[in-house]
Figure 1 (spheres, one colour):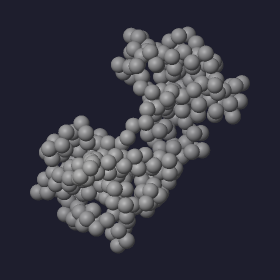
Figure 2 (figure 1 turned 30 degrees about the vertical axis):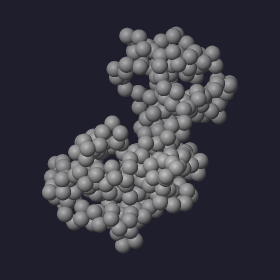
Figure 3 (figure 1 turned 180 degrees about the vertical axis):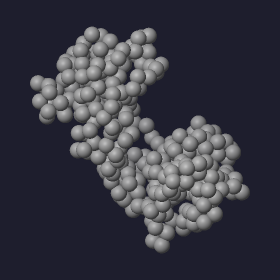
Figure 4 (figure 1 turned 90 degrees about the vertical axis):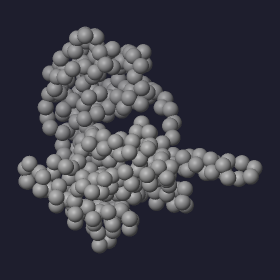
Length: 334
């Protein structure tokens, strides 16, 4: 499980552009009662589901925005929100141009919050019961071609410890299909070079064993022997995160933001449009290329750490589109 969220009042911050469209120039304070209710809910939600820190942060942000919007309308706190208030909130978001996926996540947060409040007997009824989620468009993952992945893998400068770290990160991401948070969060103890596997802690604290593959294992061994000791010596605080597998130039563990930025820069070096490259895109490429080469869908499901096969099935559509393009390009009657 990820660590429990700290009980705290949501910090005051500047409103985003989307929030200014909703709330206007005034960014109302979060009512104290709502702040306490949200944090209490998040603690119980984490204890029951083991949800990731990122999920907790997303739910907190959505619930705080909803509570402040209600406060700006003089409608009181979340605890006394009626179905009509939440319907008005959804109507406002549709008019303000919020993406359907963003509103769907807000609804998930509200439903979890009010289900908890009902169990705690803090509300007489669930005001989200008859509210419908917005329809989400079915979008296919964007996978790179195998030649593009190869060019990207060749982009780092292997003459520096940082470049060797980048090459290893890319090789490992493409070889395993890890989520970027799983990749940069790997501890050294997660690596078993003798068996050629990683022990990965995924969403909800679930663990899975993922094979590394010979090529990625070669680069991982080089990184551990040549680059990591040099990077560790550059740490300002030698005691900071000594167990992190991947260290940046300053000796500190990589962050998701750092990896994202370097991936964009390396894509440009490889001659690939940086806008078409993302850490999740490499995860999609991993799954799509496995299926293109005949892997079983359930094996791909286990490797990706999907709890449901239906989540993995979207990759069959990606693979099918690739096969159609190959047929059209090479078959005499394509």
